[in-house]
Image (cartoon, rainbow over all chains, first blue to last red; front, side):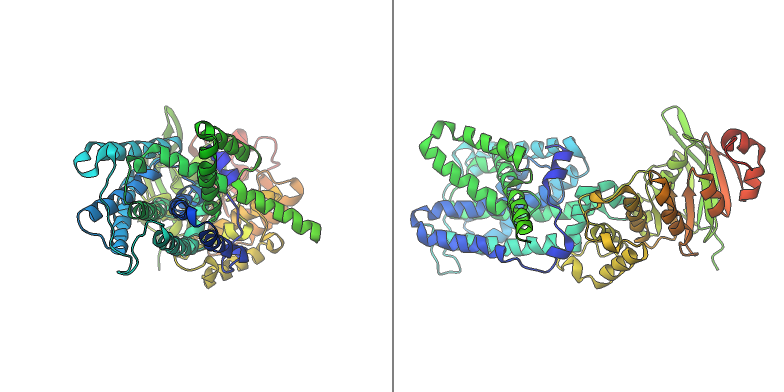
Length: 333
Length: 252
């Protein structure tokens, strides 16, 4: 995506409107999640995956949507979290919450170290560096197959009951509520962040990095802080994935996954906080549906959808919804 | 009492490739001084501002602010110590509102731009100062408008407001009225003239009427060198300056 495309795609939400107020719309994702749980019990494991990917895409939104940095390396951080959680569990650290916290911290550290290099670059160089990081991490996991299982994936993850009471059952009920609770906490944190002076300085950097230097903003430090936080959250998503599916595939570290999550976020809308909550369910449900109906070509249909969105709904479905809302409001007025 | 000049350069040099754009420039601005920097196109005026602000690094020479060597300081560090500049071509946060544009500057000046866990609007002093600037510059009607939707003249005011949000001790104004329709330049010039007396101002402008009304002293730059320096009267009488720059346009 070019700089100009990014400019047009991100949301210029007003400071005065968003700083304090909660919109009633913000209850919708949670109501939908609960409704889906009770209405479609057969799909609960899929819903669990959707929640994990939403968390992953939310963390990506910090980097892409708010900092304005296009990354194809976010899976490196997700995978770092997944493998950390998985390896700790395999070696006996099976308490889920502390296990997830460890994975978050390790991924944040990985983000801090790789970000320190990546964020020194600009534009296409950044994209290439993020790509290089993903490929490097992937190959490391691939070649240390003695520990990671390499191509076969990491197996034998068996978590202890959540809070000592709730077993991770085969229906995915515990996993569902566990992941939903984590996603909720993460959203509260990210929402706080993006509405803070820090979050606004990130938007400033995205809009005009040169002027941010000129007004005294320590741009590099801000970006590195944001990248580290995003990395931690991506790692947390990876940890949830490892814990709830009891398996880590090499794909968790792949360029493929980096691209997929970026597409999901773009479909939903970047820089809007809730883009992940629209794009990820839509993408994964469509994938599930199309894969059963037209398994060979589902990616083709997804590509068509992406083209339509980029051409006609720049800024994703949320932007489109926002524009429709404005038109309706004007009609009524 | 601090006797060191607010801003001073010594033997400043800058080349782009083989082309020397700033050549042995020694500039001294006293505290609160109103100085104009003039010179033909390509004389190196904007380059000099970029060197002073820290956007460009000089090949050699020193820059001092209040007697402290800032030659190696980053642009952002200089801004935090009170060296603010505006841009010849608007450099705004185009998708953000006027309020948000100015808020960002005030927030960095307050050193609260890194606060993570409270809403931006909960930073009361930042908000108050932002509103005060908006009011002072007559931007109240446009406060919640996206900057890119505003007429260029109003955007020019936002450009200056951002710099003022930094509570500058030194303000470098790079053609503040450039690109503004003729009828609207008055507002910007009045604003520049009404700046608080304690701010040291270096102004680049092509309009000689503006320069001669505004400046206490004028520095003339030509081919990267200081050709002349003096009061407006001295500059107006200066033979070489009239030849090189003022030409027939100024009645002298």
